[in-house]
Amino acid sequence: MTTFHLITLFPESFGSYLDASIVKRAQDKGKIALKYYNPRDFTVSFKKGAEQTYADRRVDSRPYGGGPGMVIEALPVIKAVERAVGKKLKAATGKKAVKIVFFSPSGKQFTNKIADTFKKYTDIVLVCGRYEGIDARVKKAFPMADISVGPYVLTGGELPAMIVIDAVTRRIPGVLGHDSSIEESRISSSDVYTRPEAIAYKGKKLRVPKILLTGDHARIDEWKLNKKD
Image 1: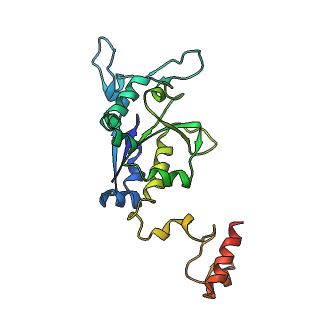
Image 2: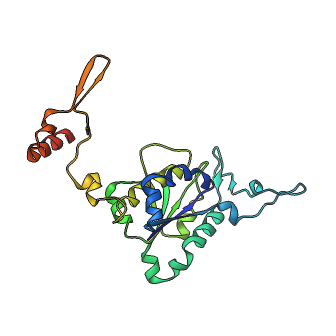
Image 3: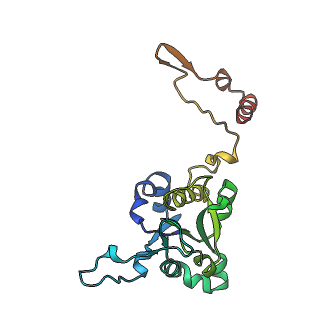
C-alpha cells in the first residue's frame, strides 16, 4: 500500500476530488491511504485574555528581509512531517521507502516519468504551502524534492498535491481495470470518438473519422501517431 501524507492547513479541500472515482476506488481496494496533518495541531496559541480558538493557533509570520504577505513557520511543518514519517526516517530500510515533496513554482516539472518513480515508495509526504510559502528551513530538516506542476503560481499546494496523488495512484498495479488504460503506455491520440457514428448539431453532421471504422489496426495506429504530431 502507498500512503499519502498531506501536510496542509486546509484538509477539508481534498475530499470532493479524492473521495470520488478512481482515487476513491483505490482507497477502497487498499491500494492507497490518505492521512492529513494540519500544522495548526503542532503549535500553540499566544492569544491572551479572550477564550482561545483553533484559529488562534497561528502558523505564519512576517518574512525576514521584508516583502508582502506572510510565511508559514518552519517548526509546525517540521513537527507535522515528523509525526507522519519520523519513525520510518530513523530506519535505513524505512528511509528508502519515504518520499517527501515540497511544492514550489521553481521546482522540477512534475511529469509522468516522475510519477512512475514515485509509485515505488510506501510513504509519500506532500507539503502544501500557503500565503507567501513555507520557511525554507523545513527543507534542511528533511530530504525533500522540490516539485512544480506547471509554469504558474497557485494559491496553495493543495491542487498540486491532488495532481500528484492522481497521477501516481493510477500507475499503481491493480488500480485501473487494465494496465493498458495508462494512456502513455499505448498508442493514443488527443482525439477520441465513440458511438454513434454520426451526430447532428445545428444542421451539421459530425462524423467519426472513416479510418476508425475500418478495423485495420495498423492503419489506425498510424493515424493515431500522426495525430500526436
